[in-house]
Length: 130
Image 1 (tube, rainbow, N blue to C red):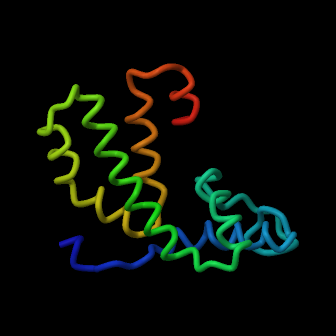
Image 2: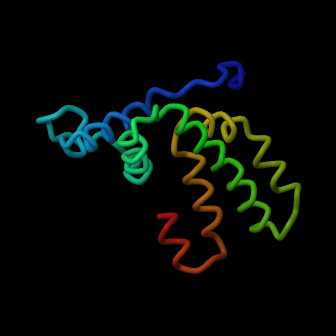
């Protein structure tokens, strides 16, 4: 069962943290200083950790907290998109990956929340989801 792993930050999140840390330390958006290799697929999520690391905070619990907030926002967006039908929210909440990905510091649930919020909204929302 996926939930049996408990609260742990996925290794992919640490890739983003490393890129953000190097950006904070003046090396640019790189994994290793002096090497120009594109290795992130989540620019916005990575850049969100620049102020976290600049403040000297541990990004792992911050990312887990952000993921959990994104899970709640996904449920709210689902409720609004469905016209207030709780069954839709329960179906999304029942997917183990939603709660698991949110708590493991990955950007997946935040992206899903943005896309869900963008559906049926203005082009402004669609731009943010993109």
